[in-house]
Amino acid sequence: MKTSIKHIALVVAISGLALTTSACNTPAETAAENTADAIEDKADMVIDAADNKADAMEDRADTLDNKLDGVDSNAEQSMENKAGALREKADNMADSMQNKADAVRDAATK
Image 1 (cartoon, rainbow, N blue to C red):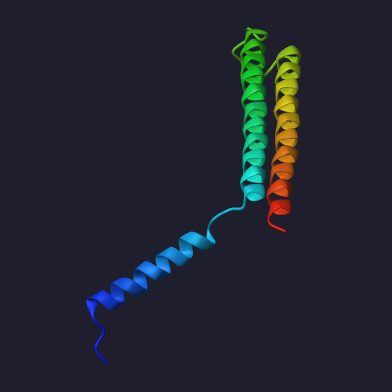
Image 2 (cartoon, rainbow, N blue to C red; image 1 turned 180 degrees about the horizontal axis):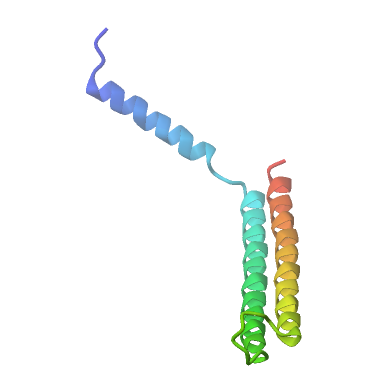
C-alpha cells in the first residue's frame, strides 16, 4: 500500500488538531490556574522578603564581632540564628502556600 505525502500530512494535521483541542482548559480550570499562579507568586515574595531581611540581619551580625579569630561572638551568633530561623519560617510558609496552590489546581481538574 502506497502512502502519499498528502495522506501523511493530513494524518499529522488531524493528530495535531486533536492534541491541541484536548489541551484546552475549561474556564474553571483557567481560573484555578490563575489563582494558583497568584498564590505561588505570593509564596515567592515571602521567600524574597525573608531572604532580604535575613541577609541584612547577617550583615549586621558581622559588625557585632570585631575579632578576626574565626569564632563568632555570642551577639553575632544570636543574630545569625535569628536570621536562620526567619528563613526557615518563610520556607515553611511558602511550602504551605505552594501546597494550597497545588490543591487549587487539583480541585479544578476533578
